[in-house]
Length: 110
Length: 115
Image: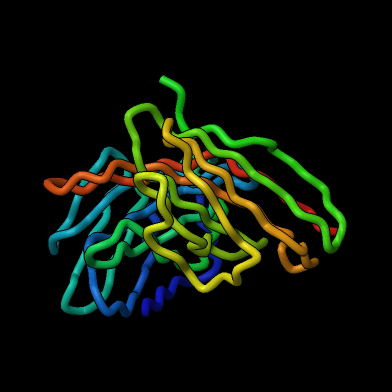
């Protein structure tokens, strides 16, 4: 089985940097995904890590440590439109199903 | 290129009724997965279809069933609806690729309310 843990909510100021953590326990691992979800909308893909290290994509970066079962998503130069829930999801080995955490609600204030 | 489309967007049903939700995958995708997302929770995997067969299933009762058609579109059926089935139902499509992994693309979801 899989267990995904994320903090529930955080508030940050426009222009700041915020780090969202995700820890996981899984019987098989085949990649970790970060999705952004605005209220009432579909999750949209942000990043994917399958090897240890940092993946950078514009203002968003994601880090993975497989030995520690740990990932973080770094959001730089926060904008008001970044207010959303950020979902961490782990894909199991040999399948294409995603196990999601509950999501971390980020509120950006002026 | 149309992404993943789901219908209807909103639905209200009465306890005990049956409901069918529909999903058309992103062009070129052959795998469809269904997720249930309760308010304030992350999506929970229901099942996945590939080559018109259910390939994997999460911890959902047999009241939840599905189908995939030759054009890769899919349906989710829920029988004997319970109040607890009220949720956002998300369809995700992906491509089964043995060489590289691809992310799942989500539709906008169907908001089901059971009263």
